[in-house]
Image (cartoon, rainbow, N blue to C red; front, side):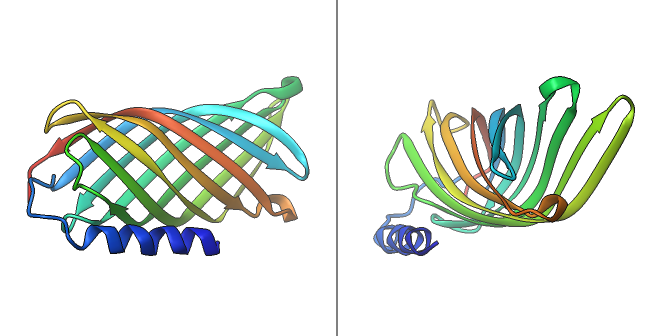
Length: 176
């Protein structure tokens, strides 16, 4: 956690001398997502999707709403995890074609497991912290090369320390 705070502080410091640029007002992201879920010491890979809507307040600070869904069927058991989270995002728009970012999100996490039509669902509070790198094609489109997050969930009486990675397309709307 200390390293995350240090990385955010460094990102803020490096953003101070940024010159006025065409910072997008909104960004829409959609892509593939992989979650390595921790089920009480047993790792389970889940695959799914990641969607987010972000708004930049200025050249380095904004907010994001993030929605994900991940699914697996180990041994005939249906497992899925959905997250609905929001929080601040710190972006570095000074480099022309590359936008690194860091974010901290808090929200609801819904986990479900089921077998033969019987299921158990739990909704709880989750926390994620991470960042990523967008490679711009032009002022309206970029590819999110990587977004990696550390996701903490407290399902079924256990704390899970999960890792999530995603990649996809980002569309920019408006400018500041």
